[in-house]
Image (cartoon, rainbow, N blue to C red; front, side):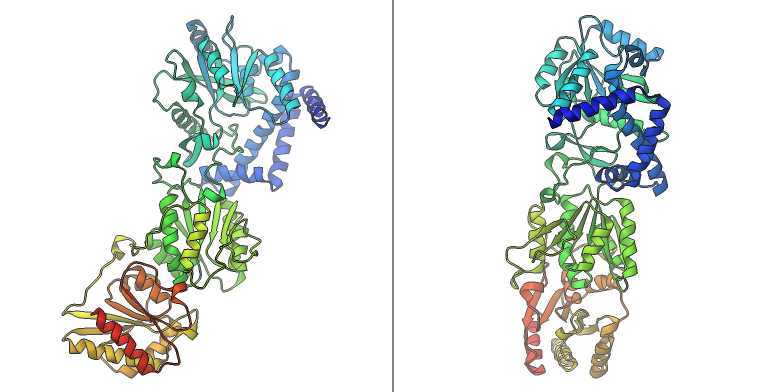
Length: 631
């Protein structure tokens, strides 16, 4: 009963609209387009997202202008589908204009007697071709069309009957392929929309700079050498009126579907207004976006070239606020970059980390933030205009969740030990319940595996741009460079007393000299650690001590640490940074668990667990013993 009621409403609406003058209907489509763009819906977002990805150089007003026209054309298509069953033959005849050249081509196709495969892009009035009395072979041969059945069976029956009444033989897309091939082999014509999203069963392709799944049907139907393939596009002239353009595809590569998409891309980019009658609001690029498979590329796309990611789908990665945590998540960022080379990756980080992360080359762009005040959240809201496809949160805070929500990303991934984080729509709950024995990098890795990441992580040291490449100097009879990082910005409680560091430095200087070697003790830390480093320098009173506390940025430390022979430090960002370039680290753990936050990269490292109850003599002797074993 419900289906019949819907059918009656649709037929009544179609009859009413078919009696309205075209200028009125055109104004109505423009009004509906304005309303459509004013109301936030998933379809509106899809339309604006598609245009923004395809033309990132446009400003928002330009995107909105084209979106408005495209929306009007979308409503025009809907109106035509409702109206044409009630059109007279004279009205149908006037819907398509045939110039002399096109008429000649159609005549030649009819005379040839060959089966013709009409390959049609999804423009707003494509259906006018099928209803036009001249777009067919004539005589005993007929025009067939493959269509997608409507979900409402009663409505679908009425639509199919209307198409058949206009002389079209219809074939359902799933069940009618065999019948459609037989129809072609009998010398008939077949119309096929080639540019719809083909889902998992389609072939991998790049279209307007993004991966998409294209239909294999054009290649399937074109296998017979006797079939004539024709690219037919209904170019809009005015309301309910189009001009037919035909291109005979005599010589094409084996991959006909890809050839057709290249032609369509050329038509779109060469059009003064990017062909707004093409249906920009459909999910052409809706592929590889299922949450549980997002972080690995489907096999069908592996052979594509992704050097230019200007127009690609967009992933934003929000790295943690602390240096050590950032280093621990970098193998995961590197894995995402490797397994999703098609994505345009933007890293969001505090401003002091931007130059260093840029040098590593794991992202295509960076957004610098200063979370000292909530005003910085405007940056995330402004990212909405870029229509990011996904957002990965490595922070574990409500503020990080708010940031992701403000961007409007369709997929928002994050780790949740307890069922909170309501602003993330894709969450992973670890089975081990955040066990202290599970390293933070491993927990993140499990999360990304759940969302599709494949294979093991690479734990070899990072290599940034060539000017910051890894350089390891083994101890020699030249100068042995030993770094000391006594601070810990995020947790001051992890710091050892100054007297302990002074004793460690003295013992090491004595040991190095006893071996006939020269060395330097280089002190590192942030401006907050400068007081500690100054006290150590003052207590040592040695010409071999160099104090760089508060004088270097992260990128400078990254380069400097790669030249050190050893770094002795607390559980800190400096420890992770030195470990990331392969420098031998001696990491002193007191209040934290090395199984949870220890150095992760392959390279020489000594984990020394101590207690603040131990005397500075005991601690320094343990450090010296480990150090002597490494020389």
